[in-house]
Length: 98
Image 1: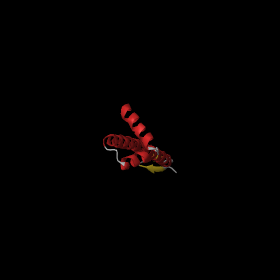
Image 2: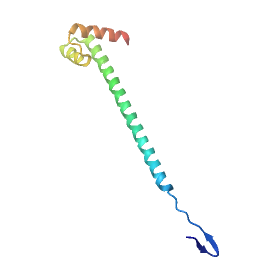
Image 3: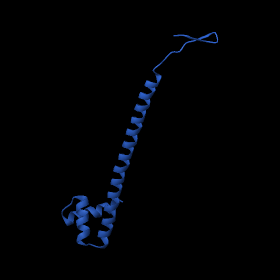
């Protein structure tokens, strides 16, 4: 309904722009949340791979110096090699590749 203020007609139209912008902002925030969750998971998997690599490298170098049974058992758990000869060959190849 038009209202008259100082002999000027004024029309007010109600729009639902707020509702659409709320949906867009919600969608945008959800997308950003998924992006950062994916990024965090990717970083954690890469750190896991790196830490495993450096642990194998350290234990192989330690095995070259000190051939103790504990080093063999730790390396066999990390590399899934049950035989000491296989662990020893793996360490030789691993240290050559680096």
